Amino acid sequence: MDFSFTQDQETLRAHLNELLDEVCPPQYAERCDNEAHPPREAYEALGKHGWFGLIVPVEWGGSGGSAIELAILLEEAGRHFEELGTWLFRTLTYGGYAVLTHGTQAQKETLLPKLVRGELSVCFGLTEPHSGSDAAALTTKATAVDGGYVINGQKIFTSGMDISDYCVLVTRTSTGAKKQQGITNFLVDTRLPGIEIRKIKTMGTRAIGTTQVFYTDVKVPASAVLGEVDRGWEAVDAYLWYERLGLSAARTGAALAAFDYALEYAKTRKQFGRPIGQFQAISHKLADMKVMLDVARTLVYRFAWLMSQGKATRVDAAVVKLQTSEAYKAVSDMGLQILGGYGYCMEYPMQRFFRDSRLATIGVGTSEIQRNIIARGLGL
Ligand SMILES: Cc1cc2nc3c(=O)[nH]c(=O)nc-3n(C[C@H](O)[C@H](O)[C@H](O)COP(=O)(O)OP(=O)(O)OC[C@H]3O[C@@H](n4cnc5c(N)ncnc54)[C@H](O)[C@@H]3O)c2cc1C
Image (cartoon, rainbow, N blue to C red; front, side, top):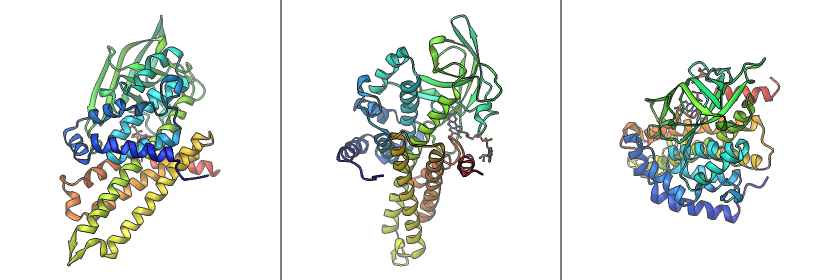
């Protein structure tokens, strides 16, 4: 494969960075994290400038970009502020990709124009208190009634539920021989009666964070079903691949920002009469960080390319998720060590990278689960 970007892709990245430098500078990211303020202004600015239409086909008003353009968008958004990147990818995955691949004509007509205008926020409700890594063991129940369904159950870690218009909610509509059977996805309006949202306090990703959601006799119309009744798991699997691409790109962007900060610090902070970057203990750390990031970026764009060619496999998705998450975690940890005591202080951004990166090896399938998938792919 060819790893070079086209001139159009380079131009796209340059235009995007011009906008992000203006609407999402480091002090804005810091304020959002400190004040638990979702980066709404930056999100809306991206919408106003047409960035949400990037992966939407031209016939729906978008620019018809591929997974590679998507990776560029999310890498740069994540480099400016990880939570802007993750909010963006959630909406693009569940309000864009999921609707495009499994939505009805009516769902597309309702949601895609709003998405393209940047007036939509969509989250994803899969995890439950008793089904985390074993996600298909979910029990939130949707019961067919006259004209629609009634949903009862509990979800945990539905990130962005409190700031979203819709949630792609994964439910059980029947029981089959396998737990993956009998699953149905819904596009649920987050403001429906019977939905109760409770914010969960977390160590990182504090601008948007995550929530626990209780569904009590929530009535949804039959038109809210996304995809086929009882056959939703296959779709969830596809969304998770897409999510692994988006998250890996956004987190690699954030890791690059952590690296840049640590590198600059190592060049300017002096001890024993010289910049600390001249001590081999520090310079080798930075060399190792660069190698980890080069590998992570290469895997992100390799996976994006494989997706754009329809050649990506489950193992490819696990490889990119595992490597980029572990790289982000390691780079932030090493970055904090390079800053010494200042890395531990809240006035410096490294602690935010350190806290945020800790989620990377847990969310959307833990590192252990990615290793299981890769090992199975090896026939083990
Ligand atoms: C901040 C945050 C945001 C999130 N956002 C969302 C969201 O928007 N939507 C959503 O649906 N979910 C979301 N999640 C949920 C996330 O995907 C799960 O936390 C994750 O899949 C792990 O599930 P668990 O926490 O229940 O851990 P468990 O599954 O209980 O795992 C606990 C430990 O056991 C290990 N383990 C479990 N099974 C195996 C196995 N078979 N082999 C080896 N090790 C194993 C795990 O790797 C882990 O180390 C979020 C989580 C967090 C913390």
